[in-house]
Image (tube, rainbow, N blue to C red; front, side, top):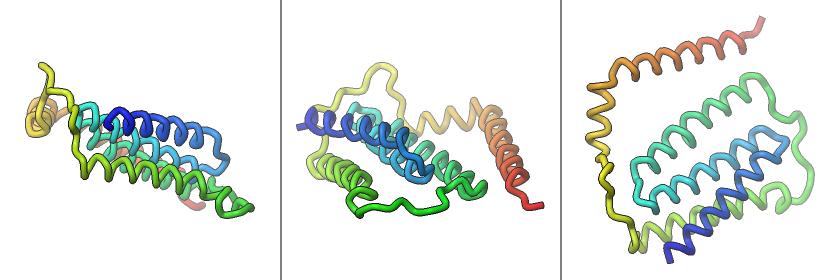
Length: 162
């Protein structure tokens, strides 16, 4: 059962990434890329890496895609006219990919992982990861936060009205 869910999620990730690359509207491309990140995070969870799955959702699907949407809206890069056509042609791929990813995640939630791999020698708990990140590598975390602050100030400067 887990192998079937893995192949379904891999197909969903491939299809949503291909749709993200082929879309002309940047907002639609970002929505398909978020679907790809969600399916990849479920694959990571199935492979026995729940921390990487959570970081995939929080950092990539959450923070970075919201930043991309913010930049698109601030620079007004969206398409000026809505795409014409029947509902199933415009929203069909997004709805079907979302249904597949939601169905696989509910299946994993209710059935659980039966063939989950055992933690290897490099296994680290989320508590140990957070402790190492904020004690031994605190300077690097602060430097990255300053770089993100500079990027935000630069984006606000570029989007400023004259």
